[in-house]
Length: 513
Image (cartoon, rainbow, N blue to C red; front, top):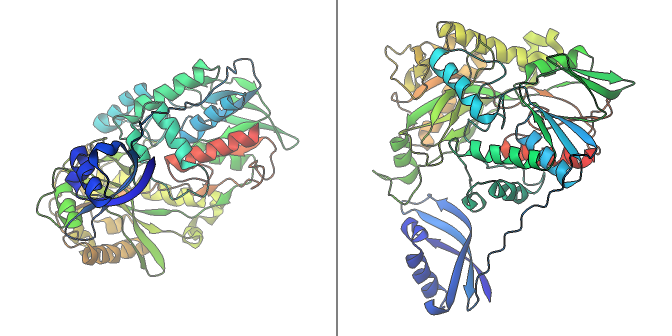
């Protein structure tokens, strides 16, 4: 028989099967010799008390042999099938393509950037030479923004679709099965590129196409229907259906749609800073210890407060990670963070952002639905000026930031292009600055030791989500006025991360078929 149990154990016990087997045998009165296999289904950390525990959900095979069942997705050869155009090879676009193949349709992906391996050279230029390739960077290229900025797989979007289905497909393409077990699964920037390459091979092997270095420059509409697309080399591709999955930073696409009179909506988002602490300090705070024990992973944190009627919260927290330059145009500075699979860097970082509202963009109302983008751009371009017109990031020690004091010296951080000591009061709008200052004080009360001048604040953290929504019919997922245009994923305003974007890609592909 198979018995499903929930058990709380020490971190060491969770990692050592012999200890785990012994405890299960004792707690559930099952003879060890009768336990033929343990299958851990879910794992989470309970760090609320000084003595940290691991929560496990386990299938126990009692006097029953465990037979591994690996059911792989069945794909069809679609090389001669009806074609559907997908714009963008991020998670929404890639998972849309896989779904189309399952449905017997041929995906043709148009991607402005390069293959995932070739993107590395442009990231190196961005980091070392401060040169931004506007088509190949942390946001654009095969795999999208998540590929080189962490690969976190945690989502709150479980009502939107089958999260486990997405995780299964990632495992089929090389991800560790641990992502199906951990409460907050994470692949890591060092491992995700190979998985993306494997997904590409599946798409091509089953008859799909992927065209890199092919930026969309026009969507041609006739009688409110998609007719064709034009690429940067003037190539015209006739088509009747497009899945538009371009990501939250494809500002040229928003401008294209707006200039053609295709409906867009102004959308709220969040903006703030990225703060870096030593991972050792975060471990001490979260695990209530002097030194993290070897069986515990580097500690994350998640924190939120309501301040002056706005949410102030941590975003994309990266334990054992670094801060990266994520600009998509030359004259701007943008920060983000990532961690490798082992999360073994000595520093941790997190976005700390303030909820924005539509009224906050009133100074840019002449930009219509692009007002949020104009708001973003002004801050990002000013940060570039403050950093000496380079990718150096304006930075301030945390206590100095809260007290409005310029830091005489800003320690070297994980942000490799470098930091420039600045008073961030000169960069951030007053309502964002004051809410962040109060937020950090509140966070310091909750996490003793968090509020320290050893922590460094980097600004801005501005690409938390799309400032624009492309409206679509909730039943058909087509644009509300343009037949055959399927706005999809994070860039369309319907997702917020790898998993939710992948789910939305699948849904759009299902509606296309």
